[in-house]
Image (cartoon, rainbow, N blue to C red; front, side, top):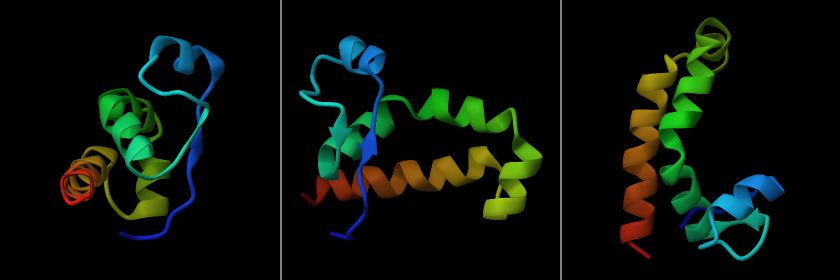
Length: 78
């Protein structure tokens, strides 16, 4: 598995996602959280589509479709 930093979620997101025990998520928990919220993340990034495409050279929907496949594979292989 690749080595990546984790993510810190807000208290509100933690409260609405009780399956996660703490605000700082890493590894499988991080990927699971991102997958749960991938549609919201994609929609938010689409509001800044031009800027996103300048940074990542892909439209948000294309980027996150590839990310979703990758994250699912990482979870399945763990």
